[in-house]
Structures are given as C-alpha cells and as structure tokens.
Figure 1 (cartoon, chains in turn cyan, purple):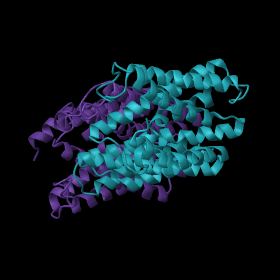
Figure 2: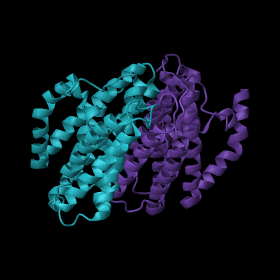
Figure 3: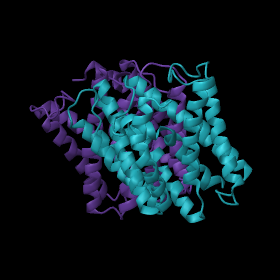
Figure 4: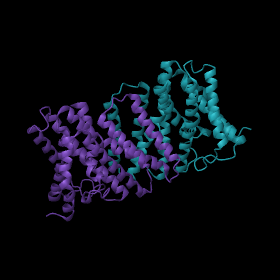
Amino acid sequence: MMSDKLSRRMLISIPGIPAIIALIWVGGIYFAIFMTVVMLIAITEFYALAKVNELTPVRWIGWLMTLLIGYIYYFQPAMQYKQIILVIIAFVTCVLLIELFRNRPSPTLNIAITLMGVLYIPVLLGALIGVRNWDSVYHSNMTFGIIIAIWICDTAAYVVGKKWGRKKIFKRVSPNKTVAGTIGGYVGALLTFVVMKETGFLGSGFRWIDVLAFSIITGIFGQLGDFVESLIKRDAGVKDSGTILLGHGGVLDRFDSLILASPIAYLYLITLS
Amino acid sequence: MMSDKLSRRMLISIPGIPAIIALIWVGGIYFAIFMTVVMLIAITEFYALAKVNELTPVRWIGWLMTLLIGYIYYFQPAMQYKQIILVIIAFVTCVLLIELFRNRPSPTLNIAITLMGVLYIPVLLGALIGVRNWDSVYHSNMTFGIIIAIWICDTAAYVVGKKWGRKKIFKRVSPNKTVAGTIGGYVGALLTFVVMKETGFLGSGFRWIDVLAFSIITGIFGQLGDFVESLIKRDAGVKDSGTILLGHGGVLDRFDSLILASPIAYLYLITLS
C-alpha cells in the first residue's frame, strides 16, 4: 500500500531520478556542477543544524571551500605538497581570524563546526566527482554502479525491514532500523554488483574481489554513513536535515549514504584497481 | 621589581631557554621530536579545554594525527595527490565512525572539536619543523630568527604596555593588552629582523622585503595567534591552558604566537623566497 509520504516522495522522484541519471550519463563539468550545488545545499543544511546549539558557523567560508574542493576534485590540478599545505593552512587560519573579530557567543565551537562542515561535506562527498572522472578516463560505469547499489540497498533494507525486521540494530541512533533490514540492504547491494558483473555493465576489468569490495563500500559504509547522519540529526533534535526535497527531507538526508561511500570508493579506485 | 610570577617563571626559563636554543641549533630529528612532544601536550591541553563544555573529544585520534603530521613535516615524503587525499579521508572517516559507536553526549561537537584540535595544533604549529628543515637545506637561521623575534615582541609588548599603555586594544578578548603595547611588540619584532639583517645573521640572501614580511609574520600574526588562544581560553573560562610550565601556564600558552606565525613563515619560505 502506498503511504502518503511515499506518494509525496514520488513528486520529486519522478522528475528527479531521470535527471540524475542524465547528469551521471553526461558527466564532465555538468556532473561536477551538479554535485557542487548538492554540496553547497548540504553544507548549508549542516550549518543550520548547528543553530540548535545556538552556534553560528562562518557559512561563507564553508561555501568558498566547497567551491574550491569541487574544483580540485574535478580538475585534479597537479598540486604539489606546497600548494596543498597552502590551501589547508589558509583555510584554518582564515576561520580562526574571522571568528576572532566576529564577536559571537561560543567562538571555539563556531570554529570547530565551520571546519567540520568542510571536512564532512565537500571533502568526503566531493569524491563522487572524482569517481565520475575515473569513469570517463577508464570508460567505466562505477558512478552508476555505486548509486544504483545504494538505491537498491536502501529499498531492500526498507522492504526486508518492514516484512521480517524485529530486532533493532542501533536503537540509540536509528530507532527504526532492524538487523534484518540492514542485512537485507547489504545483500541487495551485493546482488546489484553480482548482476552488474555478470552482465558486464562495469566492464571486463571488474573482478570478483571488486564485487566484494564495492558491496562493502555501498552496503556497509553506505549504511554507516546513514547512521552517522542520524547521529548528527538526533543530536540536533531534528528528524530531517531540510525540506527542500519534499517528502525526501533535505539534501543531506538523501546523500548521507554517499558521504561515506563516495570517498572510500574513490580511494579504492585510484589506489587498488 | 620582580614579581612573584616572574620569579616562578624563571624557574622554568633558566633551564628551558638554553635547552630550546640547543634543540634549534642541533635541528634534525631532535628538533622534530621536541616539536612533536610540544604538539602532543598542546593538543591534550586544547582537548582538556573542551571539558568545560562537557565535551569528550577522541583524544587518541588527535595524538595519532599529531605523530603523523610531525612525521610528514619532517620527512616531507613525496606525497602525491592520492596519498594526501587518503590521509585526509581516513582521518575524517575514522573520527565519524568512532564517535558513532562511542555513545557520549554531544557527538557532533565531539567530532568537531576532535577535528579542530588536529587542524589548530599539529597542522599549524608543525610547520615550524618544516622551517627548521628549510634552515638545514639553505644554511639559514630562520627558526632562530622567528623565535627570537617572537620573544622580543612579547617582551617589548609587555614593557611598553606597562610603561605607556593606556588604551585597550581588544578588551573583549585580552583585557590587559594595550594599543601601545601591541605597537611596541611589532616594533620590537621589526627591529629584531633589522638587526639580524644588518649583522648578516640570516644570511646574505635575506632581503629588506623579507625583513618587512617576517616582522609582519612574527609581530602581527604572532600577536594575532596570541589573541586567538585568548579567545579560546576565555570561551572556556580559564586563564591558562595548563600548569605544566609553572608560572608560564601551559604549553599552549607559550606557543600560541608560533601557532599562527610558523605556518605563515613556512609558506612564505617555500613559495616566495
């Protein structure tokens, strides 16, 4: 039976899913811009959660760093040691000095949340831009593979959890998630990669060890990313990170699995495959 | 007249100053180890300040990252883009996942403070190890120059402030600092570098533009680093970051000027000289 929430969700899913598929397909600068916009909204939602603690992070530094990190993940400029050090030192120093002259309550926590927003959102999530670039270079479909596996993982977790879920897996953080649902989610991700390997969707270079690795990245780290975001939202006492996507909550809610899965997938691709 | 505090301070200054001079002189791995120990104590003091907000940062991650960053600044391994990304992503992911399973109050702020400790202490202060390495390569004395200029800046600020200081410069953050003292501090730093240039202490390659640059780095950014630490301590409601150095307060109190001056000096050396 279709719930009211589900029907509201479809309002955004019906135009949203084909649009995202098209953006992944086209790739290049279009996908990079899309992801950068996603990260700008997500970091704004994250900073808004800090308001619950009456904190006022320096949002524009977060936005500027998001643009810079999107740029770096897309263009992968041949940065040397000194340039990377320059970016990191300039970032931290600016946040410290701006807060010094801002005269707001809780300056230390404002600094800490400003820094965390950048490390949590663009540094981690931006890696998906790197994954899409990798696809362009190696004529692969890993971005599709990861996103489809996460969608199927979420759906399998929901369906299996509804049908067989009894024992809660992590009540403190996500009171609705069950052991059965979480296992169902992992199996869903695993089967997705098995099918994608068997059909050759991910290319002939995709080994069985990669099936295992990516099932863990999407099915386990993806769900851990979901738990981390739940932890942060529970801590702030809110249910959704935003309302921009109607029944889907905020952008941060929709991309939480990708926040941990993308950087680990990216590292795996550039170092181990 | 020598105050009681001043006499207690000398208990640590008399053996401390020659020891530090010797360590800078010897340089190499000895200075790197010394600075790493300083950073380990300083980050522990910083994390202790968080207790005031009833936060519990993940201290051992901060210690591990301090060791790693000390190693990187000293050995400057030929890290490529992918290795740097690996370190950053692994660091952030570990902090998120550890806090997820820790079950402490205020998890978001614990994560934020843990991350900030690493960015504020070893990432910035560790650059002094890089400065000392630069000295070894170019047969220079920049580490001595910076530390002497900061000592003279502090002393000049104190003496001038006591004698002529009336108007407060930044009452909200440092109620005792005066305009006259701060200007006196800058002039002290400037004169230090003028004398060091004229005597050839910093080598024949040290230009007048470098005198100006380093007077700003030590005399202005050094004092700003002092203000930033005062901001953080005031926010936590404490006067000293620790008591390890008797009348000198904590290690963080003694190295606060170097926290901002070192990374900017290091960037200047490796990019502009």
